[in-house]
Each structure stands twice: as C-alpha cells, then as structure tokens.
Image 1 (cartoon, rainbow, N blue to C red):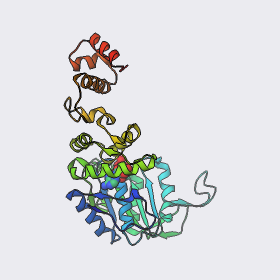
Image 2 (cartoon, rainbow, N blue to C red; image 1 turned 180 degrees about the vertical axis):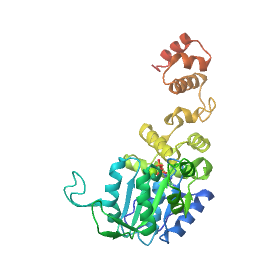
Image 3 (cartoon, helix red, strand yellow; image 1 turned 120 degrees about the horizontal axis):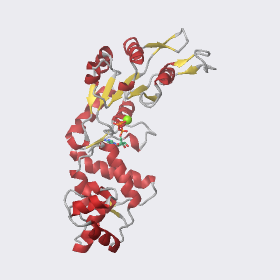
Image 4 (cartoon, rainbow, N blue to C red; image 1 turned 90 degrees about the vertical axis):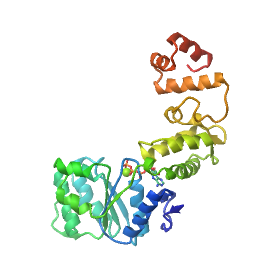
Amino acid sequence: MQAADKLAPGASMASLWLAVDPVSQRILDMARKVAATSSTLLLRGESGTGKDLLAQVIHYLSPAREEPYVKIDCASLPPELVESELFGHERGAFTGAASQKRGRLEMAGAGTIVLDEVAALTLPMQAKILRVVEEKKFERLGGNVTLKIESRLIALTHADLEAAVRQRAFREDLYYRLNVVPIEIPPLRQRRADILPLALHLTEKLCGLHHRPLLQMSAPVRKALEVYDFPGNGRELRNIIERAVLMAVGDEILTTHLPAHLAEARPGAGLDRLLSLEDMEQQYISEVLDHTHGRKSRAAKILGISRKTLLEKRKRYGLD
Ligand SMILES: Nc1ncnc2c1ncn2[C@@H]1O[C@H](COP(=O)(O)OP(=O)(O)OP(=O)(O)O)[C@@H](O)[C@H]1O
Ligand SMILES: [Mg+2]
C-alpha cells in the first residue's frame, strides 16, 4: 500500500490519500511529481472522488508545505462575492466596504490557492482569473497597487469543461491555461482495489470520531462493498461507513447496518449468517419496504403477495 508519506507535521489523517489500486498509485506518483513543481494544476473527477483531498496532499508534498493552503469555493459563494473574496478590496471600493480587506489570493502568500468548482465562475471572473494565471498579478477591488502572486493555483472541477467550452460557458483560453497538467481521478468503481482499504481506513477514522471501539467488518459486508458501484464515490463510501458505525450495536458491522440497496442485489446475498426462512422473510420484507420508502402496495407488488398479506406479515414481524 502506498500513502502520501511526507506529510508536514500536524497534517491530519484526512490528508492521507489512500492508493492501493494501480490506477490510484499512478495518480499518487503523478501528484508527487507535480508537487515538486509550481505549475498550475487541474484536478478532475466525479463528485466525491477525492479532488479536495488530493489538492491538500499535493500541497503537503510540495516545497510550499509550510506556507498557507487557501481554498475558495466558486460554486457556493454568490458570484458577486467571489471577486472580493479572491482579490480583496480597498476601503470604499463599493457600498459596505468599510475597511480594507485582504483577499484569499493575498492570504495564500507563497502557498497554494485552490479554486474549487472552477466551472462555476462567471465569464467576467474567468477573464480575471486568466490574468492571474498568465501574468501572476492582480489588484484589490478599488485599488491601484498591483500585487504579485507567488502561490500555486490548483483548479478543481467535476464538470465537463470541454462541453462548457463548446457552449461558450467557459473561456477556451482559460481552459487551455488550466489544462496544462490535468489529473483525472477515476471513479471508485474503476479502481475497485481501493474500496476495501478505504472502507477500513474510514471505519478506523469514524470509530475514533464517534468515540467507539474499532468495529470489525463482516465478510458479507466486505463483499457487498466490493461489488457496489458507488455513484457518489469516496464521499458515499464515507457516508455508508458513518451510518454503519452509528448503527452497529455489537463489535462488528453487519449487512443490516448497510443501506438496503447495497445488500439487496439478490435475496439472501450478503447475509452474515445462515438464517431461518422466517428470519430471512422478515429481513427481506424490511429491505423491500425500505426500498419503496414504506409504500406498501409497491412493496407487495415486488414481493408478489397481496397488500393484505404484507400488512399481516408486517404486523407479525413488528415492522410497522
Ligand atoms: N483516496 C482517498 N483516501 C482517503 N479518503 C478518501 C479518498 N478518496 C476519497 N476519500 C474520502 O471521500 C470524501 C470525499 O472526498 P473529497 O471531498 O476530496 O471529494 P471531491 O472530489 O472534492 O468531491 P466534490 O466534487 O463533491 O467536492 C472525503 O471525505 C474523503 O475522506
Ligand atoms: Mg470537493
């Protein structure tokens, strides 16, 4: 197993990029190489693949690890705030600018500035970022002193930038400037060897966070995780593990602690122990009801029984 091993003192566990699958080992190798340079980077990947985390790892592996790491989320900030957050402003630059404010570009100093969800930038902001990337210069809003940028820029996106360029929603010149060193993080389902180590790593982390002794993971749980597709990638895995850590009563995570859609691929798949038919019926009915969000007619249809029979069974098994 490889992990980013040269983390700065004080760097948290969250900064560990787990790479077991050859695909992610190649990404980590690439991260190590680019960390040594100061070039602008573009990290791409579906939501939850770990772009944020990899940006932190690159910072901690870089010579600038002792310098600030500053992130700006272009998608969650209102567009009119992005500019003053990034560039700062002089006193009186606009109504409400009561004092001078340093922007995040200034705060990043000689460290790393991360533009999260870069595709959400408005076209006028894209033009300003282009200047930042090309000339490494900017002014505070309402200011006339030109400041020099020493930090490295890392842009993150889950968007299809090429399509955005075709639709003229993203500037082509900025696209080429950012895309000099693109790093594409594939979805978790394309690097399956990572799933289990990541699940175990997250179990350890989340048991610690929730003050629980370390939970084991039953073999069927491991199996269910290994074959699941994780449309939400690492973030979904983390949520699944967190839910299980909170639900588990004994010292082991069982399939009953997983969301129903994970263990339901085939009835009886992923059972932790051999069950009586009645137990299995109870568990399966409960999973189908979960799946239909409690809608009984739909559940009865899936189960191939009448609604009345379902209601009787539901009552007998105490599932209401
Ligand atoms: N290789 C990994 N090692 C350790 N944890 C990981 C890894 N990949 C993903 N995670 C976990 O997955 C979660 C999501 O990661 P992150 O926030 O970096 O994703 P993202 O690509 O930035 O997602 P989004 O596009 O939704 O912002 C984090 O909580 C992180 O702990
Ligand atoms: Mg993110």
